Amino acid sequence: MKWEGQRESDNVEDMRGSDGGGGGGFSFGGGRGLSLGGVVVALVAGWIFGINPMTLLGLTGGGGQVPHTQAPRQQGPGQAGPHSKPQDAGAKFVSVVLADTEDVWGRVFQAAGQTYQAPRLVLFSGRTQTACGRGAAAMGPFYCPGDSKVYIDLSFYQTLRDRLGAPGDFAQAYVIAHEVGHHVQHLLGVTDKVEALRRRQSEREANATSVRVELQADCLAGVWAYHSQQSKGWLEAGDIEEALNAASQIGDDTLQRRSSGDVVPESFTHGTSEQRQRWFKRGLAQGSIKDCDTFQTRSL
Ligand SMILES: [Zn+2]
Image 1 (cartoon, rainbow, N blue to C red):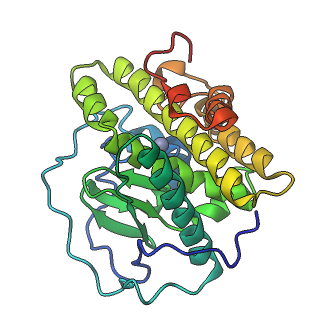
Image 2 (image 1 turned 90 degrees about the vertical axis):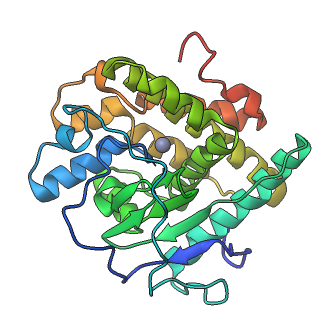
C-alpha cells in the first residue's frame, strides 16, 4: 500500500502516554463497544493476566449494558490538537487510512443525499476512558458509539502480526476500516436498532446478532477498500490477500481452535474465518452498501 505522503486526518487524538485512570479495568467486558475480534483480544489478555478469556468477554456472565448516557471524559493532557499531529510512522499510517475513510464515506454518503460525519480516532497506550466505559489495550481496537470514536493501541499491530499471523500494512488498514464500518453502522441507525434487539434476546441469540453486526462491518470495510482503490490506486500486489488473511485469522473458529481447541459456534460473536473473508469480499466486489445486508440474508 503506497500510503506515504498522503493526506493525514485532522481527527486523530493522541492520548498515548497520558494516564487512562486507575482502577480495575476491563469494565468493558461484555459491554457494547464494538471490537475487531473480541476473542483475540481476550485471548491475549488471558495470556497476559492468566484469567479465563471467556470471563473477560462476558460470555460466561450477564453481559451487562454500558450506559450510553455517560458523558465522555475530559480530554487528557496528552491530547494532540489538530495542529500537532503525531510524527511516528505508526500514527501517520493510521491517520492516512482514517483520512481516506473520510474521503470515501464522504462521497458514498453524498451520493445517497446524506452527510457523513467523520469519527475521531484515539491513539492510546494501556488503557483509556471512553463513553462506553474503560477501554484496555488487551481488548484490541474498538469503536464506541457513545462518543463516535475509534480507539486503538498501536501495539495491537504487533499482536496481529506476530501472534495472530496477519502481517502487512493492508491488514492494518482493514482493522481501521472495520472499526470505521461500525461508525457507519452507527450513523445509519443500525447500532441503536441492534442494541434494542439484543436487550430482548437470550445470550445465544444476542451472540448471533453480534455476528451479523460484525460481518456487516467487515463488508463495509470491503466497500471502503473498493472505493479507496478506485480513487487512489494505491494498493500493491498482495494487499487484498493481507486483509483477507487478517479477516481469516480473527475468525471465531480459528481463534477458538488456537486457544482451547474447542470450537463453540453458539459463542461466536464475530463470525467464522470463512464468513469474515466472504463478507469483506462481498463489499469489495462492487463497493455497494446494498451488498452488506447481513440482517436480511438467509445464510451468512
Ligand atoms: Zn467489530
